Length: 348
Image (tube, rainbow, N blue to C red; front, side, top):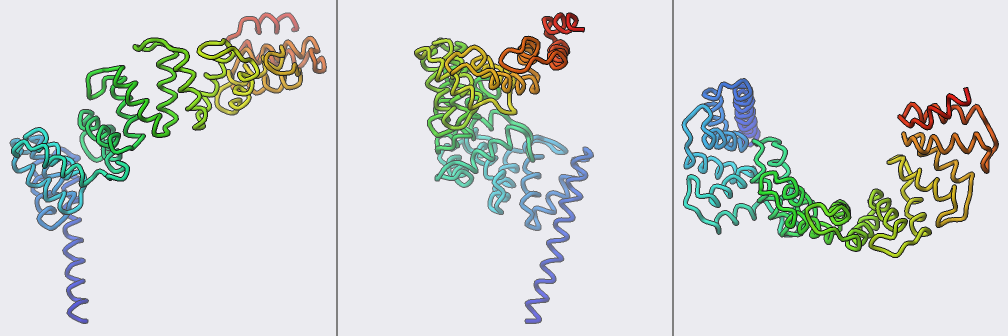
């Protein structure tokens, strides 16, 4: 028992020392003293600190504080991977894929990617892609992010598909390709990602580098709305109101607008107020119109402020109140609505 306690005491001391070496190495690295960092990372790696092995591999791969040495970088990435650092597995996979420091070997690359990618769903693969995408703990590398998001997507991860689509749409880390962006947005949508359905709907509605198709836009907005994306419910409502891609149906438009009038967007509440104001698709109801115009105004919608001011000025279905009318006209004016300024001046 005494020997066990003694061994544990020695081990804890070794680990504390190793972590101290790594902390010193990070400080030297941050201050640009790569030569010192290199020495301390090696010391930490030799003592079993996976982060030390990974950082050492990174310095060797990128030639910071030392001449580039892909073979040695691969060696230390492997050690990091063996110690459980998924970044080490990933970098080693890329080296086998690209033939840097090791013989090009797609099968070996896949082995290392499989170490980090859940075959069940690709979540870890997506997470690693996210790390490369935003440079969190590694140098930002969009081309690596693309490859990892693609792996994640192929394993059924909807976020991997969505992020991959976004990179293709913007041409970040990959050649811009709207058809591939649409393909991966649709994959994300099929996997239940509301944003994927929504973005695809927007592409089809606006004809953004693909053929404009209101029918398809409505289809994908419907899916996104069903997944809880309120912006898509609103866009779908606008298509029903205009009869684009769907049969014109003001009642259905009103139902959709009513779903989305919340703290998100004043335009959605304004549309709902307008429909109740003029009885479009719903039974005309002035108090409800005033309620939705008020919500729209509170959310910065200048037309909502103006219309509510007009209702108060004319006593249109609500009590006539010149003071309130003046208040809402002034608010519309402050939001940049010229008609509000004129109406305010007339009352004052």
